[in-house]
Length: 319
Image (tube, rainbow, N blue to C red; front, side):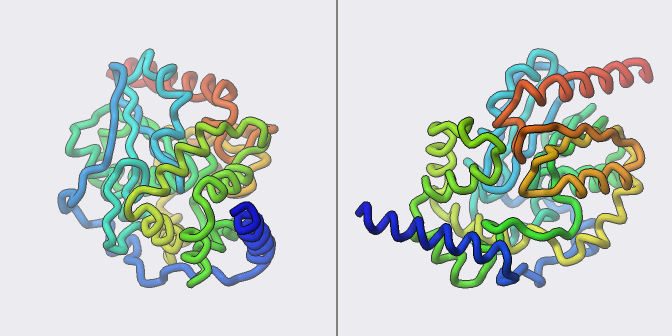
């Protein structure tokens, strides 16, 4: 067993290095674009798993790819001292349904989140999105700005996907036909998760076994690997550059938080977002990786609290 695991480890590591330099990944070009999604208003066919704690204006937390609401575990309680903090698991992740319906694009996720907001009658809403969830938060905010402009008060984007970009090596592996399925179904879940977290964290010593076990358990849920592979192929919509032209019309106060050492979504994306979002502020963090809310939450929390409190104060003054 040890020899087999060692062999698979060597193969996986070698493939990671190779694919980080190759163009084997295949994005799903058949996924409906924004023009086909933007006017959709049908009710949700599934219910996203969610939880709520605290009282006050709602703060909706949207996790990144491969994660779940668990990724916000260190910031929920501090924010709940003043706000109603709502976490959701995106379709295909955590405790949410994982149907084999081939609909896992950022636009589909944003449609589901938008409907969640409307169904739960959330007002004076603040949305925080991380990584892939940041892309979902952007699309959700654009949905709301055109159909329900008075519901959302602010947006916080953390190391968010937003434009066409080179994919990190592990995403290329999963998006590669045959190889992606071979890797995700044969390599032990705990090894896959730990390998991913080493790309996500700046300081690998801060990766806890509890986090590895939690995400590995999520990956073992029925249809979780199908959902992961499908999400990867649909992660960057073919019309993403065209969709990004909507950012200039998104005028709500926006805080952009980026890790200078991010190996997943480079700082250049955050700087470009700051330039294109007309009412934004950019905070750059040092010596932390792609998921600051998990790696160094004490570094992140003051920025979240200050921004949310400021927007709450401005809302009170306007009333």
